Image (cartoon, rainbow over all chains, first blue to last red):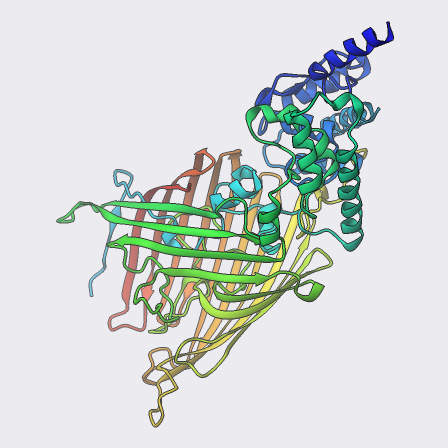
Length: 120
Length: 496
């Protein structure tokens, strides 16, 4: 029985999310994105905000990769809570980002939650 | 001499050469090498934003890379060692049998990764993004041979092609499309220890005055083919000092010659000349320069210029300081996101000052021949103010030439120039600008109004429409000749 369970687990490994199933993602490549499944209700509004505001200049792919790997995909630098805040400030100051401080703060809170979930 | 009026108006089309107005320090090769879009460093190519300025000051090393402190290097070394151990003894569930390509890939990642690349996460996580054929984590393991040799993975070159069409109303030859040029650009860094940049004008047709027009001698090939060619020893001897050698634009003003929205109109403060002296602040010189960033917000540079057949040295210095915004190593300002928005959250002020002292004219290396020479200096101040969608640039230069016509017939001349330009970001890829310039070069006094609109339908393509209204007087010529020009241009610029 134990061997059967182990085989089932091994068979499921290739299709499991790299992010240890806590942070669910959908799509591939440029369409890689976070899944709304598993996002707590308290963060749903922030999630919806991110899906609208944060794809104006780039796709969610780089954000997903950063959350999953703990490293910014371009610089290779650690993507931790300090980096999340720095990126939030960068987007706040970016011309035509159309995001105010409150919106940036909400997205930062969400990303910090996703980082915590990804680390579990 | 009667007034000359040149009308190239709205019905006139001029497809202009962007890259011939000066050297480029922004090339698509940087985008390929660092896998970032053009807008990472540019407002609309080739005008730089503050991150592009940081990249430039960082000797073409992408911020965040190559600046590891000793402690971080130690951590990375530990991470590499850990990755190797992990790769040697993989988790049992990863083993899928002999000849498993995925396991082989992980083993290679653990053993072959270079010291500058993060090892652990790249070994664990790239599969999710590998479907599009590229690994998005920049710590992707490089070939060990390539990493040790210091050669960039990708050939760091780009090309720029230029076509010029002009329409001059009422001229005998109203249309002329024969002016064209092809330029090669190269730039990057070697293992974060050295930066390099060069431009080579491969081919020109009817393009007189397109490349280096300064009194720096032409290259031995007899052509103005090498615009810039230099190497930077980055953080020499583990100090903050970068040593730059070769042929390049000396660091004087805040903005490089083509670091502007306009495609056809350089800033008068950088491009004016006096008398027959061909010296311009924006031209390339054969020089050695030391520059450094201090406290992340102060930039200083100083250099020596020495031309062929000139036995005197020329000197220049530059100093600039930045308040607000990202600093010179691209660190974001510390803004409290829990506080209400403040004007200081979005305000960035950069102030720079510089001076240049030089001598030009006949070569002074011929024994027994007294050369005709002109000793000159330039001193300038630039200000760059950025607030949300609005940007204001101020530039002023005073100059002195003691023998500008090399005959001593004219007295020494003082020159005064100033420019003020306001830009507004209408859309992310649409920027409007309005510039006013004043110049008194000792012979002419003139004023210019230059409105411009730039649009980037794709990030490496720029369409710019401009209009220059220029009026003044040439008071040192017989009869006080009036200056009155109206020129409209439509320029298309692209890089690849």
